[in-house]
Image 1 (cartoon, rainbow, N blue to C red):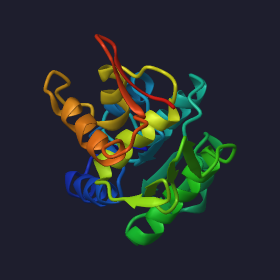
Image 2: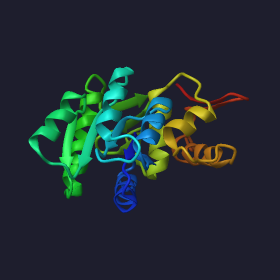
Image 3: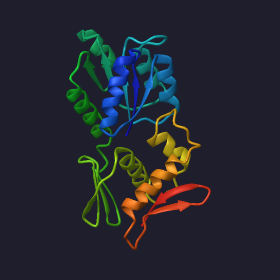
Length: 222
């Protein structure tokens, strides 16, 4: 899951990013409303954490413009403004939830999980292909009933492949969904992580699930 944090206080933004990355999320940061709006409109995110008091363009304006342009991505407003009217304004403009500073990070994570569950309420909490089984809630992967230990990045990459099973995913697609915006896609890091997954998912099994499509990308299929 990829999250955009639009927050101008660098210390808070970095704290949130570090905590979310520890939970396995891919996180990008925008330091003002204009940058946040641009990133949200031009990149794929699963959720936006949006401060209200932002430079250049305030959070309420960003929220309203995203909804006007048809972006239905979940928005969690995070701000020091805690009056009832502020909350009502944000929710009326299309925000999905509201949490005020200072906040307990455990509650913050719970609200994010709830929003993502609601976003994907029509989807299963498990992904399966052949004998490979991914439990999205428990953050665990099994093949043939045997648990496979994956790093957060390996899990994110495998999740993206499994959500697109049978389809070819390019390096650009993987970069946009699994790595941060400033990731250098010309390095061989993606190939390295694909090999990590192959060693953990396919090694020792007759049936290989992860495939390279020459000059195009990768695919996972039975």
